[in-house]
Length: 314
Image (cartoon, rainbow, N blue to C red):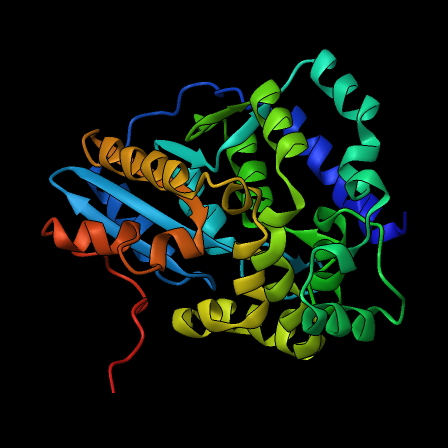
């Protein structure tokens, strides 16, 4: 198993093991502080929207995976907004026991290899298999599609040493003791069951998208990150690497996409029913896709203030 596959596996284990705890209470916010947060948030170099309902303010930050640690983007305004917020919401987190982790280690071959000594050629169409072999410079692969798709996306510019928006915000929330929690928890035993029992056939769309991202090359991946920084939302969503990241998400592969959307819609509604300011770090695609969170909020008569997320009509 190469370093890219090892990094992905370690990140999966870490994601399964993570559990968030709420920090100590934040001092009350006055209306002028709310205004300051909103103004500050609009200056940040990241896709961000402000939604108001009465005395409730929801600041949605659209995150993508694979931002290089070497990428320069302004985080000070985002950190400042978090420091003044009443609460912070993070993406769904896995919560696992030591027994769950032990089970993953015990079944490591299931995660890293295709079943029954089969190869990629047993599952992929001849055309897609030829494309994958051309990209990797190798013959049919015995790697699981979980691992092989990650290798392909890495060739398309998905950073190995990546930093996330959540990482920046989590550090700020911890430093300022801002109450923070995930929008939901994925039980470790449930997640492991789903990962271990998902058949290779469920990854076929992912493999097609991952091969396309690899063929687009790292320059395309770098442009995706730059479009994210400059808040060019339709361009980000249309990029091959972003489409591959979505198609290869465990939520998508396991058929849990609707469940994830429901979790975020519920979280947005709850935040807009509570007084004060909530900063929420959410997957950009889930916010900006057709009928996503932003479209739904707009349909409810609210006005998400921020960059345009819908593609321009001809």
